[in-house]
Length: 367
Image 1 (cartoon, one colour):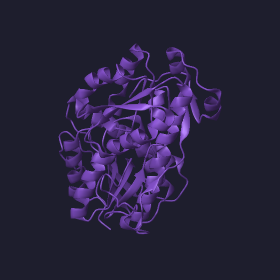
Image 2 (cartoon, rainbow, N blue to C red):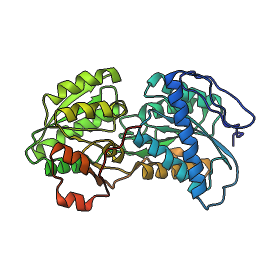
Image 3 (cartoon, helix red, strand yellow):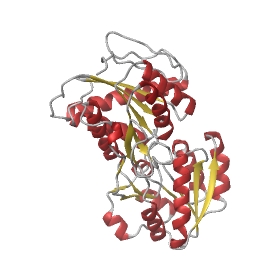
Image 4 (cartoon, rainbow, N blue to C red):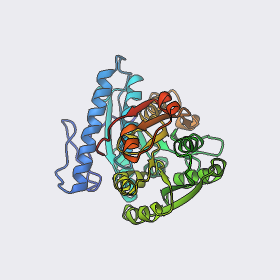
């Protein structure tokens, strides 16, 4: 077992390591991105404390240091992190007792994601957790050179991301959980809500392998429900406003993926779509909270919890990452927003509403 280090707080943009003998220290950097990262770090600490307080389990023997790298700031990935810490705590790995957590967020910047993975290795962590594909890929590339196992979550297609073989087995000391979208159920839901619609627009990042594989699944299944899929590819956040405008001229609705670059810009996408009275369907609960009409989505806290328990097995020596196939949550649930439906003049079918895991009657401000 590697020696547990003092908890460190590293500002991703500065990429400087601040060592302290009395616990976590905050960076003095004053840039906007730095401030956002510090806010996320504070939230991560709160999440960890809550997980500890909520657990009655005794702490497991030994002490551990892990690095949690998150690709972007948005609700579903934040929920993954919260669930991950809960899962660890349920297995006796409790932050502040026998677990030191180093958390960093790359603010949707791939170059920062690579830097974060290197920082974790320099700090000799016992395990790295990658939340979303770009940062998980970087962690694995670094981890295999430094004998550090990696557990990932919120990766739609681990095979396409080259983190798993076609049969689900790991490619090395790396495993985790997939948030593969229930595309068939999503199309069924859209057809039930919009019986006259003919075209669905989807924004996606052209370099994101998970988005590419999901787009292909949409295109394969859409004709069965009488839909045409119209794509809007972007390479960076700055491309999204123009791509959104172009797409909204061609489609009856938008369906959102778990594409991190697109999700990070969802408030502006919703604003443009609302002005044209075009509904936007989400892919998980947080997107419905902030203004998507509905979603057949996954519970990302549960996904993170499942991932945390996998990580606990590795840390406690009960299994190697290379011995565990990646896992997928298969249960999708309906989430709807009655305020959005009213604003758009759309009636949500009674059977969907009655079966909903959760309905929202207002629109929350995005974080």
